[in-house]
Length: 256
Image 1 (tube, rainbow, N blue to C red):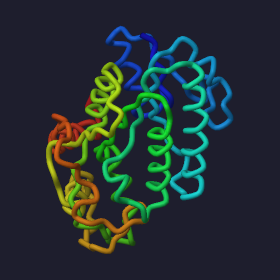
Image 2 (cartoon, helix red, strand yellow):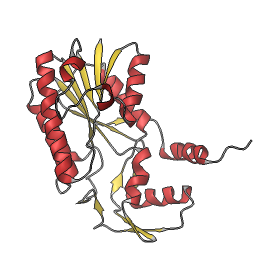
Image 3 (cartoon, rainbow, N blue to C red):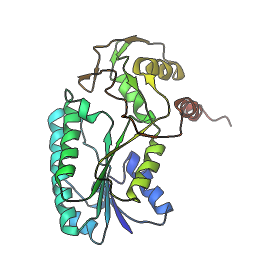
């Protein structure tokens, strides 16, 4: 079976390509470096030729509201139109848990626009919504920096290892279209501000963390249910404490 991974050279996409190839799937990498541009449409028809499944893990080049919205709308329209012509049987997209509850955020409004295009198309689909990756938490924490203090919401969050997201995407891509949203989440729930303290401690960072219910998350104020899953998510196996232990070990200098 031929699968096209859009964004196949990125953090998630490159790992997904390997995971699918390990399952003996015929995988086509669709990215700018392979000559495929979903904004202009260049190379799309050639990449989709003979394929049955498309997995879209591409992301906007910027979190800026207007840029993100233009990217997801233009890319989504071009990709879905090309898929319809190519007779694609299953469109899989990676999205974010809480996207429908983050309307204050321009980035998440853009992600919602992407989801709406998928739902409105005639292509069978599955949208996999994931919680934030462990690997991206440092960036989220740093975005809250204000001098020697970090102000973060105490809202609950259930982050996940990127490798666990890849496994879930692989399984969804190799399964039947669900024509709905599925959720994949980490096994443990934290308060975002408490999680930040663990990350700073692991990095031996002396800055302090203040719990601020009004602190913004990608431009939105979080509520207790904003970033947590619904009633029946898929739980990933990797615990944050185990991932953090490996992260710290990998950061240590090698002794010769």
